[in-house]
Length: 199
Ligand SMILES: CC(C)(COP(=O)(O)OP(=O)(O)OC[C@H]1O[C@@H](n2cnc3c(N)ncnc32)[C@H](O)[C@@H]1O)[C@@H](O)C(=O)NCCC(=O)NCCS
Ligand SMILES: Nc1ncnc2c1ncn2[C@@H]1O[C@H](COP(=O)(O)OP(=O)(O)OP(=O)(O)O)[C@@H](O)[C@H]1O
Image 1 (spheres, protein in one colour):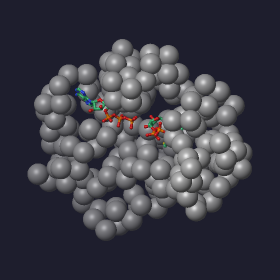
Image 2: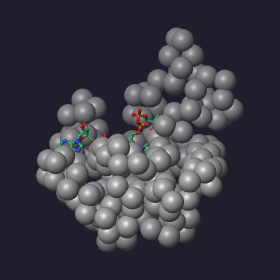
Image 3: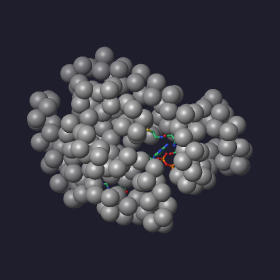
Image 4: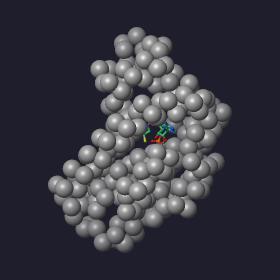
């Protein structure tokens, strides 16, 4: 069984994916793939550097993620250009890996953890979609704490994504991650049983 997993930035997608992996799910992480295609030598990074200039690279030739983030999360046109250069490769690799996992073991749950699943129009790729939800204020607090961002920087990132309330409304299943992790684990256990997955 393949299931799309999404949410908002810092809503807890990685936290929930890790708990599902502990229970036996195979997880394809689109954020990790996005990092792979932005490594030195990859044609995607070359295209991004051609567009944004060498100034987005660190002296060792790797991507200055904070610098590119500051540019694109404050400039919708720049973000659109970055997405156009990165999303086709991320989507292709994500699809290849999740279909390979599903072929290997169709009885297992395959999770495609895709932060921009709805924004990038990938919902038709999944029969079932799980949204990891937290209210915006908790999302902001956790993002600021984890990334050391100001409120303005955190809000700019949130505002570049679909409203998490809309994602919750569109979901087939919702994990409310606004409590402690133990509460999230309990909700995942209930969902795992509801899906009839092997313990
Ligand atoms: C802009 C970049 C360099 C910022 O890097 P940084 O290390 O600060 O963030 P990281 O990559 O860990 O992403 C953290 C979160 O930011 C959000 N985010 C990332 N890219 C985008 C985007 N294009 N639009 C909206 N939100 C985004 C997601 O919620 C993601 O989980 C990086 O996010 C990037 O290359 N983004 C473009 C590729 C992409 O769209 N990735 C999302 C995969 S679905
Ligand atoms: N239930 C929780 N209670 C408290 N803190 C949490 C909880 N779940 C996640 N966190 C923390 O909130 C932050 C965001 O969680 P996580 O990285 O799992 O979100 P994410 O959706 O994967 O983020 P991103 O969109 O950046 O990939 C992390 O610092 C994590 O440790």
